[in-house]
Length: 452
Ligand SMILES: *Cc1c(COP(=O)(O)O)cnc(C)c1O
Image 1: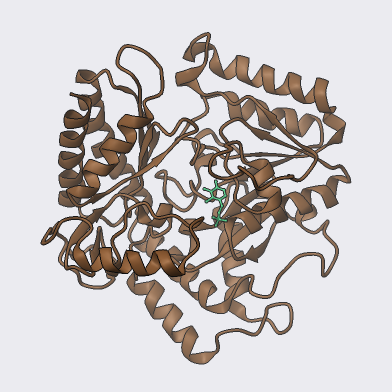
Image 2: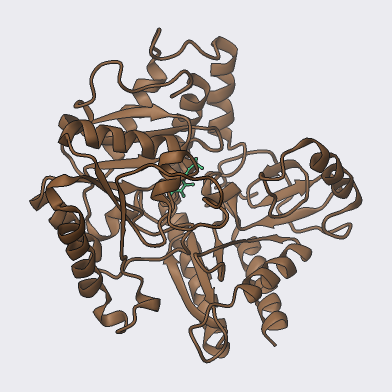
């Protein structure tokens, strides 16, 4: 690892395959796992990890894989980043838990201060901490309902917000998230989102037409005065890294302002330098009323937050928000370490550089390969959408086969998308560039092989 790397375990920053993937020890552990762990909890790449840091994941068989996943956009600062380990360890040795609602501690307050400062807008803000992204989204809805004294919640096609009962209702895709798990929470309404690649009248009409369709659905089917919150990911993550056409988000924000609706940006996947800015909303200067964060916030420890306008956040009565573990002191210390790392090592700049390298390379590949319908995303949140050549018909079989071929060569990639036809890349922002390039080499070969 170079001198500019923010530490972590000093693993050789190399791809190294010494067995087939998965190797024999992983296969054995997988058999044990299948007897002990519920089937519903699935596995993308069945190699069992021993260590991870920088841009690699090492497994029990001695293989070293290039990581284009970051544990789903979580270890943006790298695994076991120096400042995360230092601060969390120090906290572990002093105390592990008191419950902030019983007796408080200052790291919770410090995380809230950091979030209030870093999130878009210079208005007065408040923050509440939770354990998971879904829990943050649920609480954002609770807060918006308390503030507006309304009940309806508007979400979008291709949206993903979690797996709890309310957030399943907010999530668009049935399989695997919702199938057989209903009934779902009421007063949730889904409207169109500006998905340029699949907009029927063309990408150039997408922002205006999608905003008009969404607003029309809200006014005619729900009544704007009944809507507590509009919840949207500024880049839709699980839905396939869909960047809403420029102009769409500002129109939705304006509609919310005019109608007293709380605009909630779900930045759980896009936040904390992932897109090359602190938050994806910064791209179009969007200032959300509430913002939910999790994933990249704490270098791998479970932490989530709702941050927003003081008057909205404070609408929930004393005792109305919280939870036993929310804002756990070790997770808070880790978050302060992660944020310290992002600032000290300019991880926004690092994400921008990753985006340039990836998009440059992927666009070149796409020019020659009609199976790649689109290359999109920002910073270190990049995806390709695969189609049957010459059409826009989703090609989920390509995405699955390319992912498998990459895994076999020691490159961890993830799929996504409502149609399962998107390959998404979320490398740690501290990945050395030679690994990024090597990963792209493997990917290029896999794409060529599968689509030949
Ligand atoms: C992952 C994710 C969630 C859910 O977070 P969990 O920590 O898995 O509950 C919610 N919203 C978005 C945009 C996500 O990417």
